[in-house]
Length: 273
Image (tube, rainbow, N blue to C red):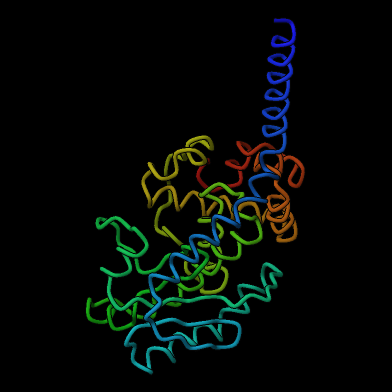
């Protein structure tokens, strides 16, 4: 009985040790494991569009189905003009080819990426790839096809943030970063006409982002990232991203890099007068 009791105690000690180790190093464990799951998603997405035509353009690979040559030229021009600008801002370098998938219909985009039908989506970062709707689809629905430039910059920023942080970020941070790049490179400001709104708490923004009003939560996210960059500087913003990539959680990264708690970032926005 004593031997069985000793074995039981040893097992319990080992379990506690493993749990404590996992809790203490959860960020590092997550950033180590996350790319594997992202690559699985990337593989599944590649299988879904295996019958698409592929054109290689610089460091990008453009997959499309029955797309007009002029439309592909348009995508290539957007890549030429803004691809390096996005990478350059973050000082991001990769030897891997960046995949851009151009979907021939909303139905195929939505079904492949598992997007809810009630959403209005022109593009998305998913499976490690930039996914866009065809120019023809936009024009037939009466939308300005030039919006693809914004969508490309937005989704490519998601790709960069995802790779640099190895998936270790709150959703508001990557959405705010993508909107900031649209503002920085294209002069487009999300919710520019909104002058006053009640801000969400950082807890709600961090843990309930998907449940919040899209327009207002995205507006606040943009203002938070804009506030970080304008108050602390671009270098600190990039350092914050790199710290996340080392497995440091966002709260600790804020304290280490910016010297503030996440809640204090609310004071950087124009929402609290």
